[in-house]
Image (cartoon, rainbow, N blue to C red; front, top):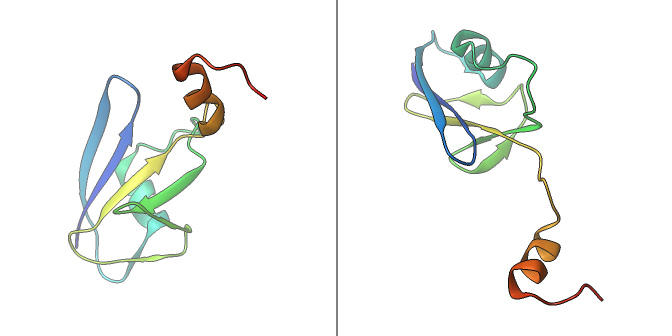
Length: 86
């Protein structure tokens, strides 16, 4: 199975393609990629859909390592619009 594992930051990204025997889980792909180094990832997704470490993978899946939010999305919109929070 061919799985692409992606970790992204605001101005850069890292992508690794791993070959795994079927059946494979999210945890298997993370271990094979070497991208999970205890960093700040807090969740995982396959093509944008949140998954657990035990979720099965299919050939051609894109596994995304998600970072925690730095700010509440509503607060970020308020700041961009220049409105005080209320």
